[in-house]
Image 1 (tube, helix red, strand yellow):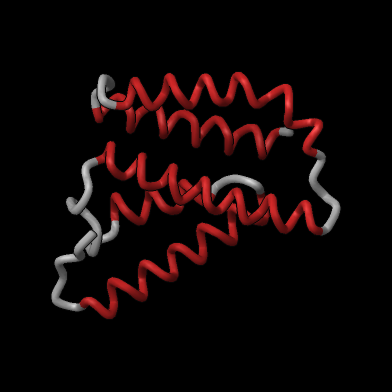
Image 2 (cartoon, rainbow, N blue to C red):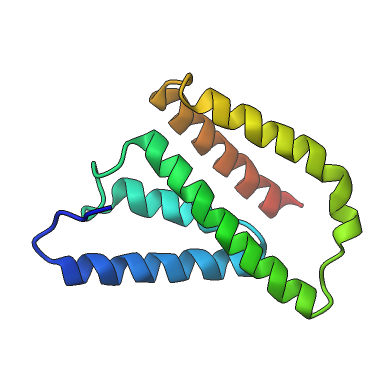
Length: 130
């Protein structure tokens, strides 16, 4: 990806800062890093209009996967990961990921934004009320 900006140093610094923030949040809470990445790629002047909304979601998914893998490695090394508890969730998660990837090109961008916003609001509400 080539960043078109008059100030490439600021763009790179911002990218590193957002990546660090996303990774830290994802490591602390086990989720949430992708929300920071979506916001950064979609709303910040350096990146606005550089990627389509669908490219932003796909790029964020790849970044969240890497963030999650690094968190799992650290949790497992510290003895805090129970892989047997995850096994029942793997088949439906894989199937859902596959279906979601197939639907990405078929769902309108406006609908994707609304679905994403609703999921973020729902997750936030559940964290507050539970």
